[in-house]
Length: 417
Ligand SMILES: Cc1cc2nc3c(=O)[nH]c(=O)nc-3n(C[C@H](O)[C@H](O)[C@H](O)COP(=O)(O)O)c2cc1C
Image 1: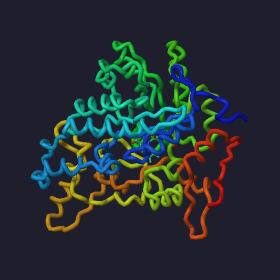
Image 2: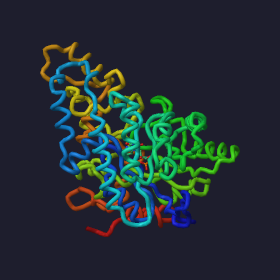
Image 3: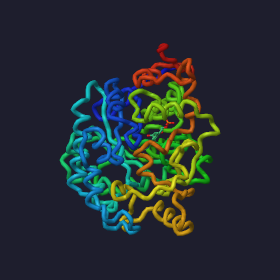
Image 4: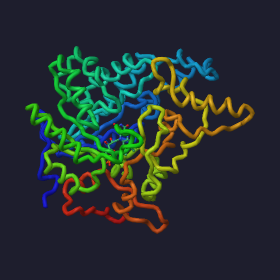
C-alpha cells in the first residue's frame, strides 16, 4: 500500500507534502503549529478569529482593554449597536499576528490564514475587508475562506497588489456551495487556487444542517466536486477534510483524485497546539458518547464539541464590549437574545444558565468550548498512557510524519517520555 509521501500537492509552481493542518480558532492552531507544518514541507494555518485578543496574549498588546475601556458605558445595555471595532487597530493586530509568524517561517512549506466570514464583527464587510487585506499586506502565503459562503470576499481583495500572487482557497461542504462561489466570482477572472471539501466529521462549525449532517459522507462529496471540475475543464486542486485519521485514510482520498488532505483533530494533542495541556487531556480521555453536534453556536451553524465543555449551559453576561466578534450588522447576537430571555424569566436569580446558546467569543477565548472532530475518541490510540493516568503529549512533527509515512492504517506511538 502507498503512503502519503508517494504524492505531492502542486500549488502553482510549488510542490508540497500533501498535508494541510486546518485552521483552528481561537488560536488553537497557533503560529508554532503552523510553522511546524511549513518546516516539514506541508501547509499550516493560523486563524484570524479574534486576532486582537490573540495579539494581546502573544505580544502583550492592549487591544481588548482599550476596546472595553472605550465602550465600558455600554456593558449593562442589551443594545450593542454602538460597539464597533476600530479598523486601524484591527489592521495592526492582523499585521502583527501574520507578520511575526511569516518572519519566523523556515522550510519549504506554506503558511495560510483561515478566515471566517461568520465573524461579522458589527460591520461585516468593512471588518472582513481589513482582515483580508492586512493579512496580504503582512505577507501571508495564502488565505483560506471558511465558515460562510464568502460570495463577495474575492472582490474585497481584487485591487490588492497581491490578489493574483497569494494563494486563495475556499472551504465548501457541497458542490452547490462551490458552484455558487464560482458563479459569483466569474467576472473577477480569478479562480480559487485550491478547494477544501470539508465533510461532516470535521471539528469546529459544520457546513451541514443540524439534523442531516450524518447523511453525508466526505468521499461522496469529494467525488462529486472532482467530477464537476473535470466536466468544466477546471484544474483546481481539491483537498479533502474531516475524519481523515491515519495516513492510509489520506491515501484513500489521494487515490480518489484529491490533491491533498486537511487534518486537525490529531494535532489537538500536540505540544504546539494552543489548547491548555489540561484540556488536551480531556480530548485524549473522550469516548465516542462524549462528543456531540449541537446548535449552541450563535453563528447558526452546527458545531461539534465535547459534551463536558465548561461553556455549555453557562449564563455569563455577554462580553461584546471586549469581544463582540459575532455581532451582526445590527449589533445582535443569538446569545444576547437567549441571555436576555433567561434574565427576564429569572429576575431575582444571582446566577442564570443559558442552555440553548453559548457566548462563543468568551468561551472560545478562554478554551471553555472544546470543539473537536468526530474521531477525537480515537486520540488515546495515538499515544502512551503515563503511570498517573494522563496521556503523553505528542510533537507536531511526530503526528505530521505519522500521516506522511504510515502504511496499512498503522499509527506510530511516540518514543516513551
Ligand atoms: C479544535 C478544532 C477547531 C477548529 N476550528 C476551525 C476554525 O476556526 N475554522 C475552520 O474553518 N475550521 C475549523 N476546524 C476544522 C479544521 O480546520 C479541519 O478542516 C477539520 O477538523 C479536519 O478534520 P479532522 O479534525 O477530523 O482532521 C476546527 C477543527 C478542530 C478540531
